[in-house]
Image (cartoon, rainbow, N blue to C red; front, side, top):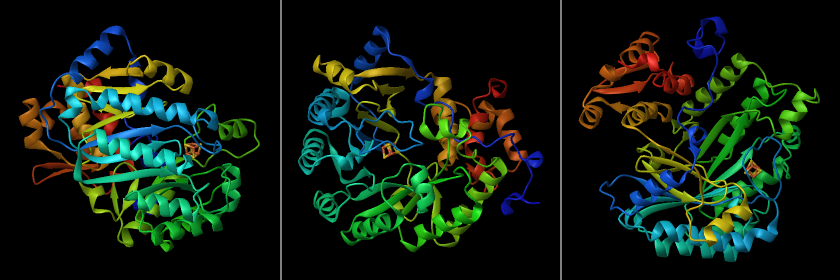
Length: 429
Ligand code: SF4
């Protein structure tokens, strides 16, 4: 049976299993050394010569409670909030004062975490004002703010709107109350729906996260979540398959037999294809790595660089450096108080890595422009990765049209696997 119906059996799959993440993430970076830190700071002391899309990410690692599936380094202890915000501003200033960042324009500020919405109004206003004052934000810069639904009162939503925040990214996860309890989400579905409606009333663009393939979740239950998102008329939905990380409460409960394990890959694929079908039939476009969207900006090229900092921040990308910050809040505060960039891990991309990285963009559904690739690296993609491109074309997972290498619809669910193909050494010519 065809993959489009989701009933294809595993023996016919193009890969053994569905990957959830691309290669070359912060997980591959190495602990920072004196030498790599010097390279990083030297680079920041040089002027930027590129004019591409950039994102600023201040990171707030606080949440009101820990969700059962969450693997992020977050804290529920409010006594560190004030010293943390002071440290965060100091760390942001280290970047803002650098020659490199002074010559950068940012198209997006993404306040991530954690759940920055748990901060007081005073801290939120202070942080946003600080970013506006110290960084060159483009006149059309959009401000996005991560939230959980706890504490998202009408007053808070009105306030977020008054701060000229364009979009809130809300960790909804599921509208099903049984699964909400399982995931240790503190409010019920009815409260969540009310909050999303109020957010829209205050002119905030609403983007939500949904998790699928939860322990014991059926296809019908997942479909209800998808249709609920449609009914609420949200602007975009990030659909993530559940990953069980060993130290999470959910993983422990599954390991102890208290909860059933998530369904196998064929059901997971069927769930993804169901969401794909429903969203695309209703005017949403697949974009980024896991998103269905109606937001125009989501279809533009993603940011090429992410300048960010915060305890647990892991998305840093400046020049050919990927970096993440120390996770422990007290350590973060202490390192920053000494005027040092609070990096914990760093990866310096080689030219080879940059080529692979350029191909990897397929997983965020961005086509690879052959001529631009050749201008940058001196070879066409099919000269650099002959085996990978041939195999993926034969499997009809990618296609070359109008000088662009694109995912096909068949390739879409396999976009992470496709990215990994360019990281197999045997594919290099
Ligand atoms: S709200 Fe988000 S960051 Fe906080 S514990 Fe839950 S999943 Fe993790």
